[in-house]
Image 1 (tube, protein in one colour):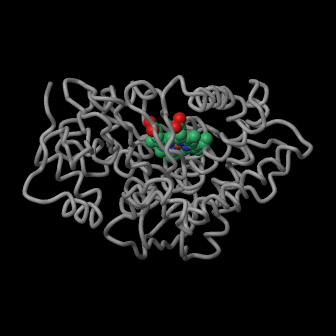
Image 2 (cartoon, rainbow, N blue to C red):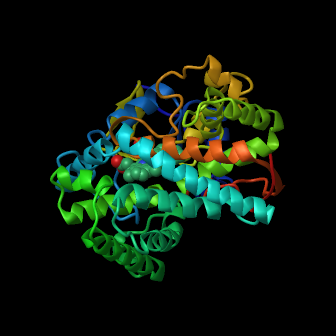
Image 3 (tube, rainbow, N blue to C red):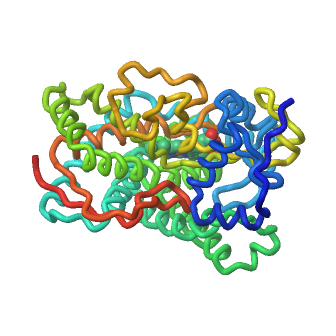
Length: 413
Ligand code: HEM
């Protein structure tokens, strides 16, 4: 078994300091200097070898575990734990509820919501925070898809409050023991925000109406509390992440006017409701260079081996789609360049392109995300030209990969 090399020459504290200053840069340079699997610090292994990453993600729930909840509370994560079993049942029901017919219907809702956002942005001319408008739209998209004709009430607002409350917990690379964490005011705030969202979801589920994902969830035999747990996690996952992907795409279009023109041209000659191939390449390229979920974490259950690499017992295993997607071995010497045309011939090997993760716990909302991304980008890129008026040089990586300090201006096509 190969033992992952460990960088020398600085203490774990110095490593953490570097990581805090530049998380993406630190992971990228660890791989460049030490190879595809690196022991970053005692008990933390970065896996950037596609074969090993694939094994870790496929062997999740057995050998590599998801050991924390959305609020970073510890859970066992093993397959036969009742909570894991309930979660996996919920995942299967969610995926059944994301079938082509309801998604086609939902595309119509998304088109009209995106048209309204276009009108609002065109009138304003300057957009102070593009992510905000897109987040509000994707949050409503999720509740509309879930609740059918029921009134979801303030579920999107309560989701935003929970997201804001858990951000400081997720953003920190440090994990305090639970007994200590409970004393933190920010931890208590996150507990309150989660129960406020859960109450709101229970109220929405009890309102008259039918249709939507919740019907598929209840039809599969899940009780109200299990449905609420799925809606909390999925609601959080679908609030900022798809909005971040669309925002990155708009930034890329602003920076690459020829791509923007090619998308608009393809959209004008496309049949209604279909997504041109060029727009799909543009989205694939956006998710390659700016995968909103830029870090996937697992915990090794005992000592493990993955594609010949030794993973120490209990290690935190980090897989970064951001770093994997910039590998010159996979994507060529211009791996850092935004070039949608590469997707004409590109068929990434398994484990090399994972914006939605892969294996046992891959993104359960991918089908909905696909419809959201392709519809929003089609409407926005088809009607507007975007210019970046300000943006920080480094993205915000505290949780989701976000463009920091972004403002844009728009003009009509
Ligand atoms: C651009 C949009 C999206 C991207 C790039 C994305 C990406 C991801 C990634 C990388 C993971 C982690 C997979 C892993 O740990 O192996 C994940 C998990 C998850 N995603 Fe998404 N996601 C998106 C949208 C959505 C949407 C719209 C939903 C709504 C249902 C959703 C629900 C979830 C849930 C519930 C999980 C946790 C799965 C589990 O632990 O079993 N995601 N997503």
